[in-house]
Length: 454
Length: 184
Image (cartoon, rainbow over all chains, first blue to last red; front, top):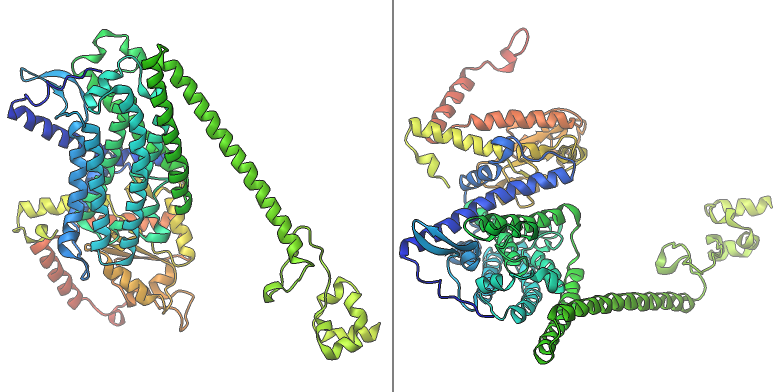
């Protein structure tokens, strides 16, 4: 694929300034909108109304949250490492912003008479740049947790970083198929390469892996373990208040927008119009693509909110097992399939789409089959273990572990009497032992009375 | 941030006061502090029937650093009192306390050695909400009254002035013992 990056880097300085400020403003506005949107949508999903008091439809809610946070007292714990404590939210927020420099918003347009692409800049490895910047953003979280000088933030920060690093692996691997297919790592090149067909369709497994791992990467439900209130209070930002907390909040939502924009760029054809609209000739020129792009990004953000309104939080070990034992192996196998398909296409002349579709089908069958086999074998093992446990234990011991227990399945309940355990009474009340359940409930004092009655 | 407290008296200060009051009442994040049966009513307020989210208050913060309002929902035992005070101290200014139910307000039915006779023994309370337990509507009413109070909060020099007026009124006010007839 021949990509032309010559259009980038020739802008006059004021165009660059306009673009940078525009990206900043758009991101802040999108964040404000997304917070409100999330609270409204989750409210609707839970049969509630959601914020509606501040501004029309409550639209100013997140702005009010921001002003209030800015007016709050700034508390820095005594045991905090002040410089790092101050630096951490700054790293988090700036890294969230600058990742957007290489995201293409649209094709070449005319701004004040200058033809320029709707993208701040681009270079041959810009997707790697996004990954690198996202990784530096994790430093903000780790440092915040460490510098707070408190236990919960430290544990939350460690958990966050472990989670984000694990899911970043799966995320990067899902990109490999796109790189192999597009032949470039520049975002504008990848968008151009998707002109015939979106990668979400022909590289469906990659797309699914990316969508899963992007939820884990942004610490969102159901993967929001670092913010599990019951376990870690607030996670890495427990000790943060006022504007510094607002910065983390901002960074979290911008990261959501960034991964959504990356998903749009790499898999949903970027700013290109979706199918029925793309029949219209003017759909992919001028300022219209900006709209398609924002709509697609909003689609992903809605999925984020939908997941949050639907799914409960995963346990940490389940989450890690899913990342390392499912997502990463599946993406490795899928990369091999894609690479093989490329070689076959280059060596023999078979349409890549056919190969990839067959490969995807095969992969799905292999994965599902594997899961079913594993499930069945694990069930058999469990049953075998249960049986073994039953046979090992021998007869039912109602006082196993020094307190009364019910019989396990397969064990027979044998009535015992505490009376018989008393050496003195045992001699006189032998019939009570076999007399049935009534004697088991009798207090010790009653036992001799019963025997005398008999 | 503290900057708003240092403004000179005048139009600027009153404008900032109004904006700050509006923002603060518009996003009053409660801290999770459910202690007993009142907490169940407090949770009901978050549900679809009463929906405290309309006021932007569904964001119950687990960390006191980010919370504005402590709803003390339930009786406070002697053992819980220092914990409650610590949570209050960990909250960042400006902060408000709502004593929910008679137990939090005055000890209620628990007139014994184990229960604090009102949470105002350990933290300053901004609004008392009677009821055993109060219905969610009553909690919303208390919150709305607190909103009005927050909106009317003064800043900087105006706050000092308002404090002085309050103090002089309190000094001249008759003691309950001296009051005659129907109490106000």
